[in-house]
Length: 138
Image (cartoon, rainbow, N blue to C red; front, side, top):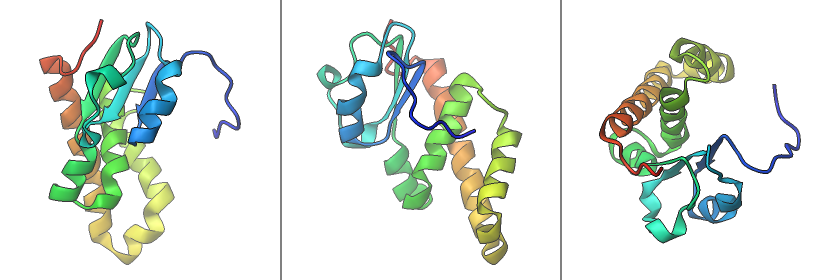
């Protein structure tokens, strides 16, 4: 379901997809927050939240630009977040993509593969970051 105007003090998960978003979401991080941001913006450690439980930096925009297509960077992030916290299964995410973008997939079947590959790359990034403890606080 769509959330109209959420009211909360501290987020469970923050996903900052731009340098401006990093700056604007610092106050929403607390000791239980998973904070995910894109490393393409070269954010310094002093610009990231100090209280987040875990901070994960992922090169989604750079990866999308170099390996896939710039328009799927958000799908890479989606795959990473699903890999990090499992709010839904990857199969459910694929079904959601089919429901939302199916009409585009019908016109260009390559878009399905592109989006599903972006989802998988995001999952791989998440697994790598968890295994290596990349950018982890706490």
